[in-house]
Image (cartoon, rainbow, N blue to C red):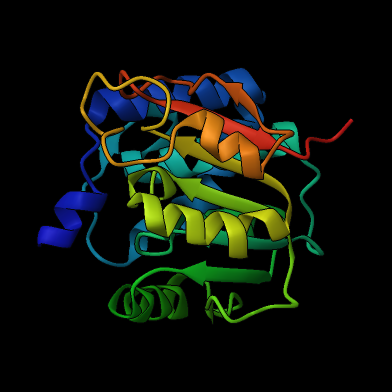
Length: 228
């Protein structure tokens, strides 16, 4: 229950805002199709869902994952051959949406062992074609096409952030990471974390863009390696 409260804290209003963003990024017809495709995320685990008229009952968290997937596609070429690494993977919902939407199968997960066990169980049910590849810091020759993190990297301690930068993120050709520390500190989240200038020393080509919809006063997104 405690882990559910960490991962599933969005209400009807936030879900509606993500739907509006989805409809901004693609047509209404495509949005209905994409939500219908990914509502499979809600079939396991009894998530909290709301009725969004043309879309039926959907979890706001699933809508956030769909919106994030579309934002990623807006900046990068994502296909079935894209290799992805995600830092802080929740219960696997973002990975499932990315896999289902773009056909991605090469997906590496970095999280706590217990969380990875949960993700494996979840994906076995709702997206069995996506194998849980457990990441580790000893993969000296491994590289990825795209890095994803939904707030998790920005909530790590400085030391862990540095480890991820040096051993994982600098080995990624591109990245899309939603952040809640490193620039401002209205919530206190930036205390004990790397600043954006320190992160830029490792990822000199990163660019800051706005989070849409904005869900916190310190929030922003960093991207690097965008398509031309």
